[in-house]
Length: 319
Image (cartoon, rainbow, N blue to C red):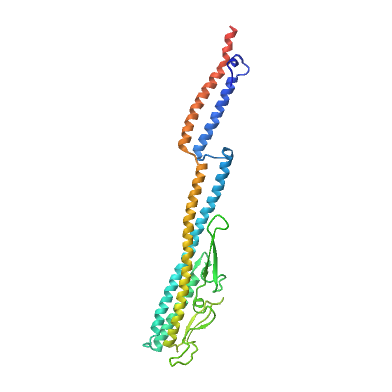
């Protein structure tokens, strides 16, 4: 800072230079303060806080990944919800099949009535195939196997985090008449013995296996007896068990996704809070600082004006 003797020099007004330096510093700080309040950001460029800016950028990137992962979880749950809804409808068809087969297994019915029931059960099987064909998410067949070959399973991997390893995998087995009633190949589902105890081929009721050209179908001969329908009941029970396993698998995956959804929401909140503490302006603190700087700006301006007038005092030496 200038000393008292500097007032005796005219060519260089050191006090004025000092006042200009103070005023420039205050103006710069006041401009930064106003920018922070106008943008709401404590760090507007890297030079404001290089380390803080780098950390906040990384947190922002992580949060973006977590937010997309949360959306992925929602999409994954939607896919499984669609599959589960179809499973429920197919299960209803199988339950209706069992009721009809139980009715046909009663000897109070004649061959004609059993024929009607057989046609109805076959139609329910066709409905199961059609439900599988209509279970689609974004042009993606969910119940027709990995490559729409009507067998096997569709493997799905859901990205449920911002790291490459944050995934949940599941498989959805193909669902159709062939997979439920003839998974090992064309099958005879009727009785293997006659009412009199003799051998029977069981071909009165049959199911074809699923292939790339078809989903399989049930066939009921006009000669199907109550004994054939009793045997068919076991096949229906097995199909219901298979569907129960499929629903159970989907439920387990849905539960895992729900847990991950909650975890992601908490992680997003925590990362946003951390970024906010680094980047966001504390308006109460910044407003107090701005008021102080405005006062300093006025005093610095006044001091500069007085410093600029200081050299005029040498005129008294000239008489």
